[in-house]
Length: 395
Image (cartoon, rainbow, N blue to C red; front, side, top):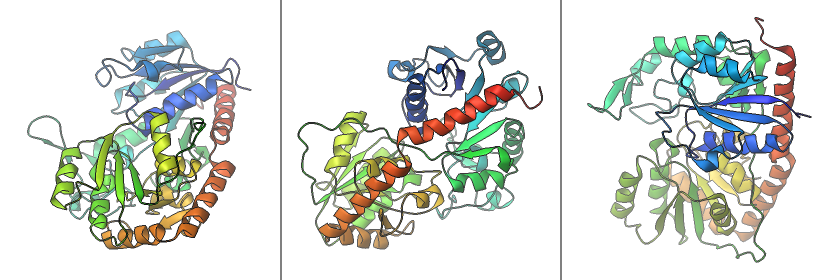
């Protein structure tokens, strides 16, 4: 199954910086074990020096120069698109005879701000794009160039959606995301819900015991991930605890400053990005993972990774997270933007060893039943092989 299938992967970054890139790298490696040949095309401006670790599972890695010509030379069976901005590359894909699959990892094409929470109140948003995006100032976006802001356009976003709808298939990691893109006019019959998975490094021969006072946060240090809410919650907890923060992001200095302002410098430790083996050790050591996102997550890979280590999760159940975080079964659900509710949930878990054990056991069982790599990869391979046999809809 899959032997000889040739896949052209397209992703802006050839650097292992986020969940989408980790998915691209890991899934290409899983497919290679089944005989699939994979080739990565990336944006040279985004990745002037691609990561050897990112390119390792691919037979070739190529900066995008003339995508249409490059793909015709490769002649793949299927093109698998991930993060890709603008219209030029998608237009080029529509002119080719190869079937195209698009994985929607995030809300970039479905929110002017890309983050799916309002600009003024930081309230989660689950609406389709429209005039309301202007009332929340969603068109005002951060820019790395002067004057530090840019203005997003509904017209441009809708044009990107129009081109993307021409693809033969769409992959999402949750039922929530399937409904969300369907609400934007994407054909439900071509949407495939393939829950994400976690790859767990082999455990060491001697396991460190879990600490009963250690919380773990893993994710980008951005406003949407809600670390500020967790820091506020730590000033309200009764049970003494420590927090390890794994990740980096543009809000890191601001969050470090907030940590000091709240008097938490001796309890909160910023560890930066960690390699999978080191991160796995932190999952195994932690009492729980706290996932305080204020944005609707399209899936929430960090939570699935925690479950693979029998580590319960405290977090919101917005978006796709509610499809693996079952309150009182695999973790504890809390409303977004509520330090008081989050603090209460943390105290509940820290104060009840039986509850921790039960939630961790249930979390691991749910992972084994639904979120192992072979579950996702087998379904994905079925989709890819079917498309390779059928060809382009317009062909």
